[in-house]
Image (cartoon, rainbow, N blue to C red; front, side, top):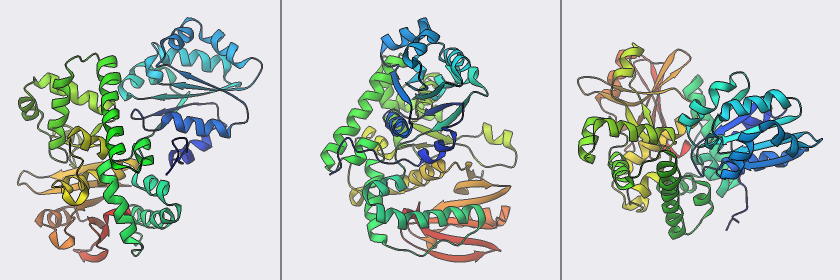
Length: 421
């Protein structure tokens, strides 16, 4: 069983590496407990000069930096080059201005790293003052590939080859690789979509411990973000809203209906949804239209960014083979992996009811992606209607374990197993 102190490598580390010897401030944002501080410590271990960590969840640290940022950093640095790691930077009032002062004063001798758990507060308090001075990265919970690597390095190499080939098909039309060790990957995938990718949950092997850790994460989110930061005292009302949208994930979001179901105003429902988005719990996807302005006005679909947290908030931790929401989990999983890959994701829906799960925009081309756990034979008229209307060069069907190819109206359609993502 992995030790609590084992640090699993994260994909984001490779993206940050080229910026370690540059002057810019490195900011890593993402959900609470997603491993941001751990990643910073892994990076710190690679640096050969002095390191200092400052946690802004601690009021005394916020006060010390606010009173005299230059003197505070000068005392930490002494006469040495310093790597300065600021944790939960959004907790610091005027964080952007203070970071700017520190950066401009110590640009050549202090390398600044910062983490944050709220995208809204980072935008408001930090990023505006740091234009040209900061590089921003996002760290989510473990993706499926990171989860596989944490469990089995050898299996990960096989997964990675197939995962690269799927994204190669999306981006360039490269043919996906044949199946290999499907049962092993499928077993891990079934576990992943129930328990998700929070690092401590990934480390735990016992199912009871996994559930307890997820329950604790949900409570920590309510206590630290909802009550403490956003000052929402009616937590039962908020939790009820979250449970209602959990039942409606992967569907077109009618906020007025959700507000009625929750017994709250439309304004409050909008406020709660904004909080969930800005704390990396959910993300909305808008429909694909030629007219972008029209797309923005249309109703979005909503997805959770970690399925373990979604399931614990629903109080549904049933194993894969006993669940009735596999279709929703599968579609949500595909969204998560496409989002991690940085894809521009939309969905397609017409007034007549035709719908395609995802539409990706790749260098001026569109690539429809449909999730059909029953296999390509389960494809409906909507998918073929999209091909007829937009004539894409290629299309992707995500299935339970099928790997096949066919041509529809000059469109190359590949069906691939969901555990390739």
